[in-house]
Amino acid sequence: MRSHWNKQSLCFLASNMQQLILPALLASCWTLCSGADWCYQSQFSCDHPCNGPEKWNHANSNCEGKQQSPINIVTRKTLKDERLTPFKFDNYQQIFRGTIKNNGHSVQVGVPHLSTVSGGGLPTSYKAVQFHLHWGNNGGPGSEHTIDGEQYPMELHIVHMKHHYIDLTTALSDPEGVAVLGFFYEKSNRANRKYEPIINALRSIKNANGNTSLLPVSLAQLIPAEQNLTSYYRYKGSLTTPGCTEAVVWTLFESPIPLSMEQLRAFSELKFHDGNSMVETFRPVQPLNGRQVFRSGGAVILASSALLMATIATALGLSQPN
Ligand SMILES: *[C@@H]1O[C@H](CO)[C@@H](O)[C@H](O)[C@H]1NC(C)=O
Ligand SMILES: *[C@@H]1O[C@H](CO)[C@@H](O)[C@H](O)[C@H]1NC(C)=O
Ligand SMILES: [Zn+2]
Image (tube, rainbow, N blue to C red; front, side, top):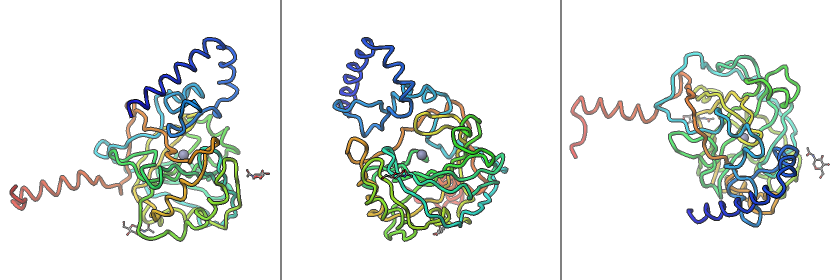
């Protein structure tokens, strides 16, 4: 691990020397290519020195802002907020024929702007625009957000914008213009049949920029049942890729989506632009910088309830002597 970082520092030292030679040219490239010239840590090598997460501020200075995402959620420091009521999902059952694309960083599916979400403490209603995923290496740790330090194998982001905007670019200029619903995945012994359209399409889009049409799906079929979506966390953050715009109302649902190991592994068959396996497509967690994370009425603090039980058990003299 250590030598890996040293190698990277050396590569960047070399690239910094280039910057000294051609500062103006590079400066204009950072502006022109903003958002294009970045990579995940897993993509970095000296042969292909790209801007890993520590250098995303070169792609866009927003990436060194004070309200960045993802974060680690420390459940015992979350604050229960009674305004975080259940969401109202409209047209989430709507079946659509989407296009799934390997965009070189992830797989993304454009969603017709018909499905909306409101309630859940959101200031207004938001309409779905696209969804994409973040994953690990062959089913290993891969989520962006972590809960009490636990990294799940994958994370789904359904990106929404305030209902009156016509595109994401406009919505991102509003500090609450975008609402992302985040869902974690967990390994299951059984394949999740509702995910077959997505999993089967991956074979056809192994290469960067590949796209294919998706068999009909609805957003509702990709997420847990509505009654399981009352427990969630809420905080203000950013996009987790450059430009890292701080315009996102984040929701992370506690209830995970089950996928089999084989289904999780299918994502590691995809390729980045450079032809290497598209794995570990997550940004490291970012500092909270004093932000408060809220939890809905339903969200349970597992650690604390375990502690509470232990306290009660001790008080009643039930604890095992050891
Ligand atoms: C899908 O790829 C084809 C070329 O193979 C291209 O013409 C089309 O615009 C692409 N569609 C999307 C949504 O990227
Ligand atoms: C809802 O949550 C319960 C309890 O955690 C779980 O057993 C059930 O499978 C979940 N249902 C769905 C559809 O996610
Ligand atoms: Zn994302």
